[in-house]
Each structure stands twice: as C-alpha cells, then as structure tokens.
Image 1 (cartoon, rainbow, N blue to C red):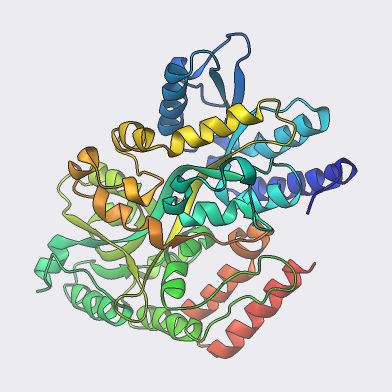
Image 2: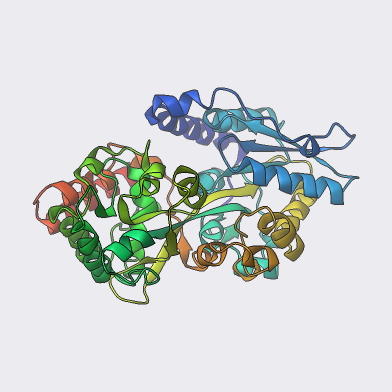
Length: 442
C-alpha cells in the first residue's frame, strides 16, 4: 500500500524514536564504539560529476562493502559511487532528516532486520518491476529476500550475509569417545553428545546457551524451533498469532533439560552478549550455536582449536535451519538515480561479482548457487557455511526490538523462565504469546 508524503513524518518520527530506544539499550561500550564513522576505502570514494551517493552503517561488514563499491567504480567509471559510512546509532535519524528535506542518498545499506519497518513506512523505493524477476534472486538468501519484501513488493536485495550454524570441538569429541567427524543431527543426539563431553570434567561443558542475551538466542536457539517445524515465533504485525507450532513446547523442554542436567555452564546465565563470540574459542565448550564470523575469531583466539561446522538441527534428523543476518541494499524514497541504483543491485548479484569479489575475499556469497567455486573450495569451512543460506530465515516484524531484542521483552523473558525456573511450559508459552500480541497491537 502506498504511503502519502504527509504520513511520512509520523512514520519517520516513530522509527527514529524506536531506534533511539535500541541505542539506549545497547551496552555502553558498544555505543561508545560507534562515535566516529569509518572512512570508506579510497576506491569507494568519488567526487566525479554525477556521482551516486551511498550510505552504509558503521559496524557492518566494511571490508566487503568497500570491495563491492570499488568493483562497481572500476566497472562503471561514468557513474561512480561515493560511499559514506554513518554511525550505527545515527542511521535512522539521518535518513529521516534526509527524506524530510528531499536530499537522500541514491543507495543505502541497512541492517536487514529493519527493512520491514522502512518499507511499511514508505521510505524505500519499490524495485519489483525493475529487478523482481531477475533469475539471480531465485537463489539469493531467502531470509534477506523475505524481510526486503512488503505486501508482495520487493524493496532491496542482499548486500552481505551472516548465518548461524553449529560448531563442535573435535578435540573434546575425541576425548569423550565420540566420532570427531560426526556432529549431532538432531536434538536428542546433541543432548547425548553434550552429556559425554560434560563427563570429562575439568571445566568442560557439553553445550552453551547464553542466558541474558535476547539477540544471541534469536540467532542460535530460534533456528532449532524453526527446524522442528514451528511456523513463527514473532507476530509480523497486529492480527498475526505468535509462537505457532506444536513443536515449540518440546524444543523448550529440551533446552530446560540441558540446563537442569548441568550440560551448560551456569555462568552462561549472566551472558549478555559481550563475551558470546569468545566462548567457543576457550576450548571448553563441546557444541555451540554461533555464526560464520566465529570461525576466524575462534582460530585467532585459539590457533590450535580443531572445530567443525554443521547446520543447526531440529527435533528430528534431517530438520535444519539457520538465522540469516547481515545487510540489504535498498534505495531510499526520493533517490534521483533509481535506475543506476538498481543496476548496482543487479551488479552485486551477478555471477562474476559473487565469485570474484565476495568469495575471493573470503566472504559468503549471497546466492546459494554461487557458493561452490574455486575460491570457496580452498576454504575448508566455506562449503559448510554456505549450506546455511538456503535454510536460513529472519524474523519478519515491524517491532523487532520490542518483541525480540529488548532485554525486558517477551522473547528473553520466556526463555529465562524456560531455562531457570520450573514454571509450567504451557503457561510460559501462553504468557509470552499474550505479551507479544499486546506489543504488536499496541
């Protein structure tokens, strides 16, 4: 549904206020780290006449975005892009101000989770008729495409992808008498393998679930729910029922059992995300849900670690899922270079760029059919990580922070009752469902 210009200020103000709440909830050190925007690489900057302006949030995958813009500028010298990074906490207010004044960038990279809010507020250009039928989109990250779609119209394409996967420590598997080349294929196997690793003692734990980090749990625990067949966790908007699916309760019971049997370090109850990426690299955790980014981090932290990568399983063997994170690239409403901006979207989806820019630089391709190439074959983890793209998804909601990411929100409150109390699970689910509906319709 189209939005009139007179309705945009209210929508923009609401988005800016919501984003201010998000920033206020971030740990102080995270906000402080965003005080100065990063500078784009020299080849991603231009002062040529007729240059296109592009904004991207600081704190994203800067190296990858720089490379993409540099590749475009080399291939398109008559219509270069000038890339500017905006501090993460200022992105929404700056876009709101730009749209109000009519002086917007021609392209914008944005955290994919906020795409439904921007699209529903009429802040993005509808590119369906210009790129929506492109064959490359058929194999593009489904999570990115889902959140870039509003009312069956497309408003962006994947810029870069992060996925959640399961890590296992092969050394601990060997010590526990497990096959180091065989990860768990269902939640029962995960439990049993974790129990054997726990039995090693010496500070080793079989599994890890952070107890005070809503974002960590939506990234690594929600895929277990999705894989097991649950349809949704959060309401997209008022009128949609959350926490739908008969398998939600069994998966929650599994998580409660893992905690009650001591298969998860009790210290995880205080984990708010600040040290989440360092846990597996300690070498003391047998199995853990984490992200593709953690391969490099774990090896930097612990060069001798022998880790494996697998898809996050569900209740039954063959059930797998992943959380799709990262950014999309969209065109703000009011861009004067829509056709050229769409050409950039087509450019980054092309076979050549997927292989010679994304994969060559060691990044995941955003198209599943491009994942197997000469560069990825040289990386022992790349193929395993790429398998997550076609089974990935992203929560689709206009109130992601209030429903999911808030430390006081119903998602984390529900999980903490599951992990650390004996409250009846049916009541826990019912309470969370009620709270989510209230937020979605509030």
